Amino acid sequence: MRPHRMRENCRNSIQRLKGAPAMTQKKILIVDDDPEMRLALHIRLKANNYDVAVAVDGVSGIAETRKHMPDLILLDLGLPAGDGFTVLERLAINDSLAHIPVIVVSGRDRAANKDRALKAGARIFLQKPVKNAELLYAIEQTLGVKTHASAMVYDLGSGPNSTTH
Image 1 (cartoon, helix red, strand yellow):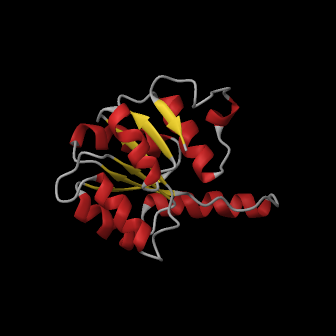
Image 2 (spheres, helix red, strand yellow):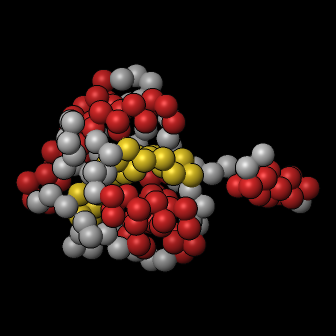
């Protein structure tokens, strides 16, 4: 058994003994062609106890979504092999994937892409570079989970980099 699985099993066993419901890690798929951005997001998410999968382009984004069935997708718009809009369109027409929420995290011009991304099915549009607290809050709001970032008073609609649907 892998060490991370052993830790998770121990944590769940302890919680069951205490009478608390067992925690399950939420899986987040990062779809971004920039290796530095993928790494930065991966580190942020793992540090906050999320299970993480990655994809490097539009085609692998859809394939990895089918493979992992994540709880949430963080999607860049500027991707090779099918941009982020293509990914959003393919998710929307696939009954088994359409329910998966998407947060767009993009360096593309906000004014030109925000409305289109939200209309295509994204729940939230975040402009790169995105602050850690803003990203975590958006994830928590989208997944309906409460963690330490939820304790912060943070209005996604008031920041210069974000927009909610």
